[in-house]
Length: 392
Image (cartoon, rainbow, N blue to C red; front, top):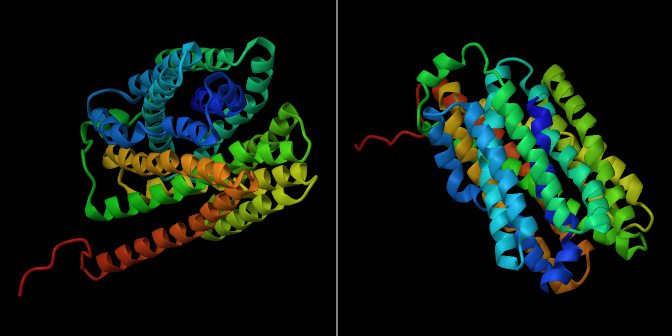
């Protein structure tokens, strides 16, 4: 059920990217403006993620995630009714506020159910709802925009999100031990947990920023190669569709062979090679197949880092910290990519930026493991690397 409802996050997020050309014409925007509007969806997380984690001490996960879905629905409605760029941006920010709540508590709810079990598999299934929503939007939004106008792309996504909110309020049930866990919920992280959580957020943020670059500039490369807008969107969406299956399989493989670092590194190399091959004329379908099957498969493996970074009683607050870092990166990266495109007038230039982002995922994951091993070593020797040293 969480997977089905969470599809609405990607479906609402993709609205603006799918109708960006319509918005450029309707409001006289450039692609740096479009990148800013894309980033506005993530920007509220910079301010709201930590407070959202804190209020988990007082309200249930079901209520907070449901309110998040209603925020997504309301924001889409405002954007669809917008008569100027400012109101469009306000709607995106409002949707982003809902995205903060729903993202945080969907992840926490899954971690609560599957921590200590097949967590990478469970997280893979959950996070694959995001690309499924995006892929549905890449095809569905283009068709809706051409059939009844761009405003209805936002309205359709809002209807889905509102329906998801009703499903959460009526159907979700917490795990049996959740009441006791909530009574022991702690606001704050130890210094060790904070360190690991921030690095995990960096890994996840870079990974998603690279994916957003692919989504927004992959179609432009194919259009420059002679494809129509709907055809280009459909080809790029292949990668998102395949992620639904490859992500789950990747989580299973990681859980079984117990080598998440190897899995992640191989997949990120695949993502970098796939993006580089977008420059080859006629390679769009092959690139999307490779990107979906290999490049984006380790999403759940990365999300499983959250279970290693923080203890269960600190999870709500810790997920707020985690998502703050994620939102920061994804609020900044799209405008940078848009600026690169406006400056060079070459849709492949921001894709090079995406390749760099995926390379940094490998580096930051290695950093997480080094910090984790160092912390474990210090605990074994009785030394706390994060505690202040006494004066001589």
